[in-house]
Image 1 (cartoon, rainbow, N blue to C red):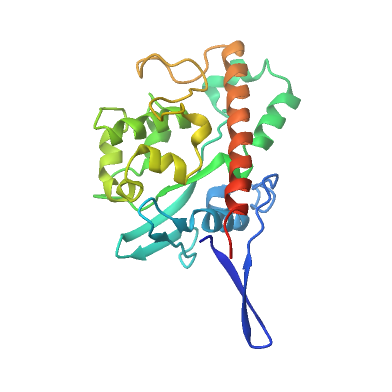
Image 2: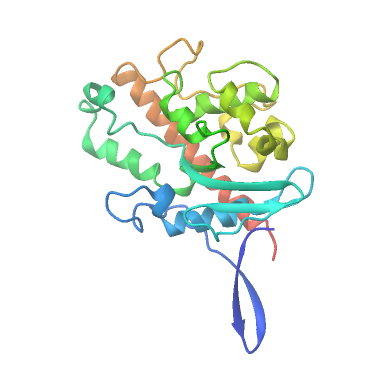
Length: 253
């Protein structure tokens, strides 16, 4: 079941669904200069609501919000502290991309940024460091072969499930207990509604820009490639937002 809010009326408990607005801009309730992943109460509530549901094995992955800025699960499945992470990067403020961004109209960039500020452009990852080493969120951000691209991150996760090497292999293996919750790559994709970023048989990723290997620089190399990246990212976030609506509406109280 999805997370519910509980109110008291006449001594009776009433379960109510949290409304999910797929047009909501998570920066709108985030203090200026702060990161929505840590400071948007709506984004946190949306994550808690959407991902408190049945795992592939039928167990309920219930999440509480009793830990500041984090979500938490504890059961016979294990204990997990989870935080939000953006998967819709525009690279608007990335210095190495400035020579490309300056050639895109402000209106285009702002429209793209707004789309990537909706719930469809966010996911959760384990937030607790293991052996004082980098989390998934941190590792994918600083790894020069990933540069926070989520399609490449998902390729690493796909390879993890079939025991193939990737730039994030060591990091993902540290969180094997988390990935075990979803049984396999298909289970992970289905749970987080990432279906529009994979092929029908879950055998490969639909990359935002052409991918040959992790040896190729991950960021768009020119305006044409950036526009392709922007279009494919926008289409994915829009499609995932629709999946969120459909999946959530199919959950009964």
